[in-house]
Image (cartoon, rainbow, N blue to C red; front, side):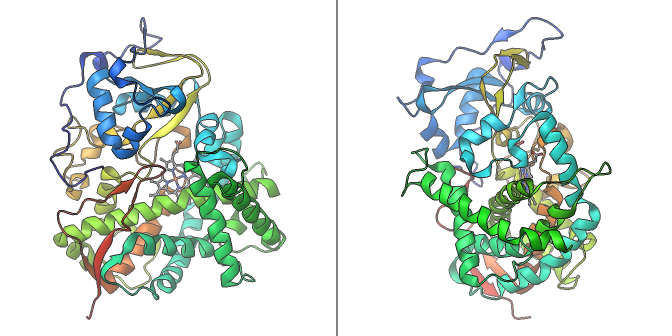
Length: 473
Ligand code: HEM
């Protein structure tokens, strides 16, 4: 399993292998082929190195770097070959995608299935550019302020049912909380919907997310994919039912906003676009924010001095701070950045090469499956001091270790597909933490290492039990 707190796991090399230091590109000299895969790195028949990745992605990335350097061959499931990009230079080249050689759609749709079709992350080039321009309008400063103001009552309502106690299953509680917040901020509360209907929608949404890990990949009843297809139908019907009302009136939930936004040139989303973007946005926002908040909860439980420092800042504000005030919670900001460094919710990004290209002087042929190993950059000793240690101050103005390389810290990706919701995520995660710090106190044993399930986005399989007590004064 991924050992984030322990310093005993495989150490990272301080010097990249000679191969990785070459940086020639197509423009400045000859290229070399992707290194041949060694016999011992072929992994299991059929599964390749899939199980190794699921057990400990960072250990696998480290081995790849030590053996092959910044562009490493990898045997995936069903005997498929892939190329892994390691280190911020290679990640930067792939994500900046100067010659438009890497596409998202053909890569991500193979992983997440057809359940998020039409989502911003799954479309490419001109199509993506046109939709991103419209979507940008949903994430302006004014809009964010409105979402942020709406979040506090939603969070308060969600937290009102928390019982706490020893061994409190914090991850599952947070997952429910972020779903409830999404029902309000994304859907606008779906006013005519009963709790039972909302639960059905939530289940449909979870079925789509979980379908990614399905083995049988078709609309087959009683399989993950079968449930995913069914879930997508439920979500589409639900959203289409509310579309006329959202088109008719302007409110400050994302659903209504997507119905009304337009660019200066008058470009707008069609009904199909709104449905596709809504389903994808909820997916993009949900697990990522849940994982980030639960990681922060774990680290603050293990580092009481940081918990107190963050609490003091939150107590100095009222229960419903403005977006500007939330952004001014400096210690929480440092803790969030450090949590995203140590456990990025999206540890790898994937791409398909749609034409021949070059990364770090290595020729990448068209059709290659590519893996951008973001998490590895976060743990390299070349860029971070004691990278395995929780040390939020590394992001402070005096140290700014994240500035050691433009792509040393990339939990939100980079290039044209960089997360459009990063400020929204900051507001949501910090607003949840703000209320938790004001109302609760908690501890996590210093030796606790989250047993992560890495089959889709990494989450603690044990529900992350923590001792959670309501504050008295
Ligand atoms: C801590 C929370 C979050 C993390 C770590 C995160 C991470 C990421 C990453 C790594 C990507 C790039 C994917 C790629 O390049 O293939 C991405 C894209 C995206 N994210 Fe986030 N995300 C978070 C929260 C959110 C939220 C709250 C929203 C919406 C409200 C959101 C909406 C999106 C969208 C729409 C894209 C696709 C952008 C595009 O392709 O142009 N994300 N996110």
